Image 1 (cartoon, chains in turn blue, cyan):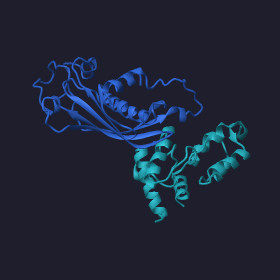
Image 2 (cartoon, each protein chain N blue to C red; image 1 turned 120 degrees about the vertical axis):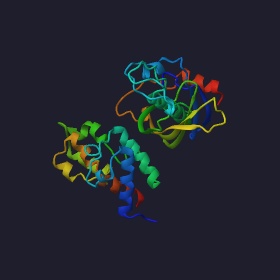
Image 3 (cartoon, each protein chain N blue to C red; image 1 turned 90 degrees about the vertical axis):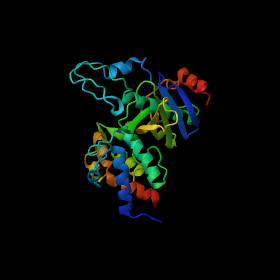
Image 4 (cartoon, rainbow over the protein chains, first blue to last red; image 1 turned 180 degrees about the horizontal axis):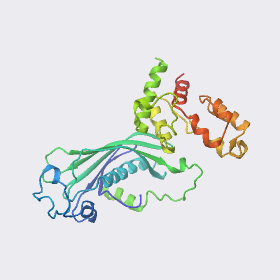
Length: 187
Length: 128
């Protein structure tokens, strides 16, 4: 993991569970580029609401966090959980997305994505995790989080599953960026 | 309480459906995990994890699918597994039916040995 797609870790229980959040902001280019403004944009409104744009008219960009990047956020959450279980000695690599089912809800600017990953299997070869991704709306702080996705993901300790390949000595997965995230999260 | 062969098969069927995203009717005893069900290398680890959970057993890294013989020069000649290599495979994977493979033991055909039936026999031996 050489880039950080999480803002803060809220909970980190060794070899069991990790909860992390990612705030969604309109300042990110990726939101503007995912469903860019277009005259041929036929998308509907946000989370079921109508945009009021007539078909064929110029639509503004549809600002939403791409599902692929929501999966990345979960991967980092579950990857940290797996790495932490062994004191970050192993190089933890995403091996398989067993399942990623999305509810269809949109993670729009101003909302917060919350990833909760739990380990279902852990041994010297790697881990299996399952978890939920939820949407929190600061405009409605008392509301229950809304489900965005359920995800199952496997991680491999690559030094234990080398199959004849050699990898660098240093742990290029858990770089200082990740250690800084954990440190500033205070978990 | 011991499980019947049918109960073992049904659980394995469920494991393979979940791990490989295949339909129940595709998971027949003769189906090859790679060629017929589309398993890739990481799927074998996933299958091991899921079998451990489903049956409450512990499976060693190369216990069920051991291909280490193929990377040992003394057991492979001209792209084929030698007699000594076949003996080693039989010793390491007693749950595998190697008779058909032994007739034309080309290295790339070893994957054909990894069938649903082989997984059933392996789990049965672990539970036994």
